[in-house]
Length: 318
Image (cartoon, rainbow, N blue to C red; front, side):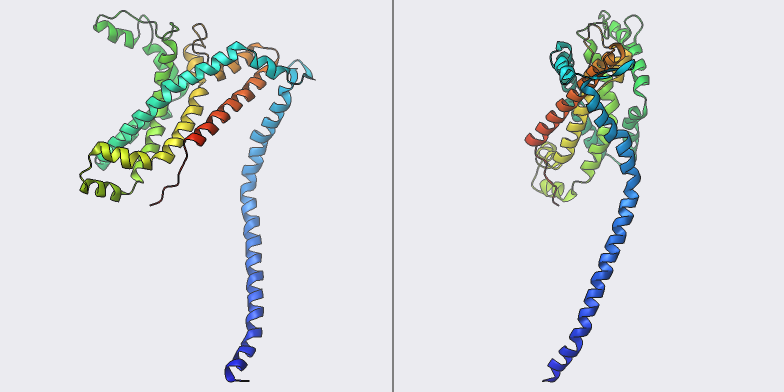
């Protein structure tokens, strides 16, 4: 046996026990880290189960029952869902919700994009001032906003009609006319959601590598070309997120129509959540309201899935 073979035969038994020991130690640490991780997420899982999972399961259970606060649940099968699906007022509220989405979400995304473009193009002090000013509406309560805009829209002494009177325009019943009421509610909805949408858009624009714009400038590209071929493609993921969240928030708007119009006039501002709330408040059969809420959930999930399908999200690679 050569010297090299002798050294290998002597060292080989020493390496193997060391390797097994390292693997055992690694498995021990992984098991310990796993237990710590599960322990840390346990409170969130418990709260999620108590306040989300269990109420959802119980709501599904009650949707198949004729149930009220004054009697025990009575199983009725799919009757509640059938009643909701055959109710033209439910579908009218859903359609009105989609119209409200079209009134608010595109405008909000467009304004947020131009505001974010302004913020990233000015000095740091000016950008900080702009970001603070645009975020102020977000911290204002929806109820307070509803009262403020109701006063602005007031027929006889509102600020908006007073401004129109300067130009000789007759007063308009902004929240008393079915032709204008939904649009009148869309304006404060955009105002409330613009702040957070703009800040998310600003963060996304700052994250775009500046090398892209420098290379485009060297090629003689103007602002519109940089926006079309650099900014918008790089904002695809963020735009998809804001589109989905804006859609869900708009179609579920509740406080503004409740406080400003109560769903009127002539149900012209009765959005889906307000429709469900009115049934829950006035209908003795609570199962109908729960079934309507579950069907609204199905509608939101279906539309969101379709948006994700046709607007593919791609990972940004630097």
